Length: 101
Image 1: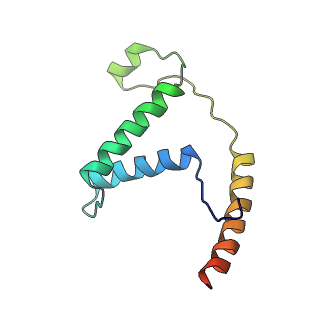
Image 2 (image 1 turned 180 degrees about the vertical axis):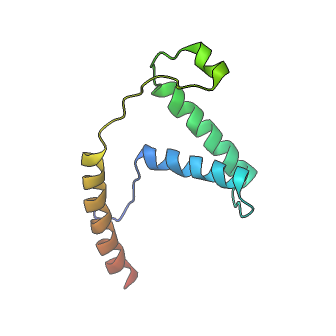
């Protein structure tokens, strides 16, 4: 992290936050998302889908039958999580030092 304690998050974390917000809004009674936040998340996820689409071909007949849509290959996130954990530890140490002032 830069010495000025500026935080960054990977886009994936933002995407997952938006999905969690949608889920809470649709399926729980304790939803906290405002319309503006909901609209922001919908636009953000739309942009992510358009910019980095999964181009796996899917059998259209599966849509009608509710069947398996094909095999999707996920990325290996182990390196990401290792770095994220190390950065998080650094952030927590620096934030604790900053909070003392």
